[in-house]
Length: 181
Image (tube, rainbow, N blue to C red; front, side, top):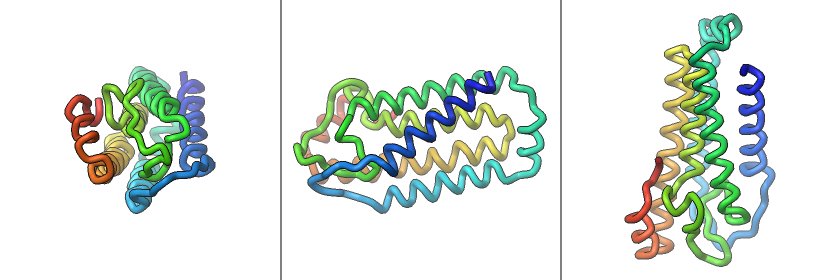
C-alpha cells in the first residue's frame, strides 16, 4: 500500500505540473492572476511547515504503513480522481489562471452540474488524505489547513470574477450547485 501511496502522489504531482506549468491555451480574457500566486505561496508554506519538524521526519521514516495511512491513501486517491475528472470535463477550457475562453460560455456538464469547483474540491480532499497519512498533529494541520485556505480563497476570487463576467447566468448556476462537496 505504501507503493500505491507514492504512485498516487507522483501521478498527482505530474498532473498538476502539466496543467499548471506546461498546458498552454489561448484565452479571450484573463480575469485574475494574483490569486494563483497567493495559492502557490500558501500551499508551499503548508508543505514546508508540514515536513520540516524533525519529529515528523523521524516518525515518517519509522512508522509502519497502518490503518490511517491506508485510509489517507484512499482519501488522497479520491481527491486526485475528482480533480482529474474536473480537468477532463473542462478539457481545453481548463486553465491555471481564472480566465474566460474565446467561446465565452460556462460549463454545466459532468461534475460541474453539481459542484462549481470540483478541481479545488479534489485538491482539498487530496491534502486531507495527506494529513491523514501523516498522522502527526502539527504536520497534518499544516498540510491540510494552508492548502484548504488557498483553495477556498481562490474559489471566492473566481466566484466574484465569474459573477462580474457572466452576471445573472452565473448567479443562476450558483443557485443550483454547491461550491464544494
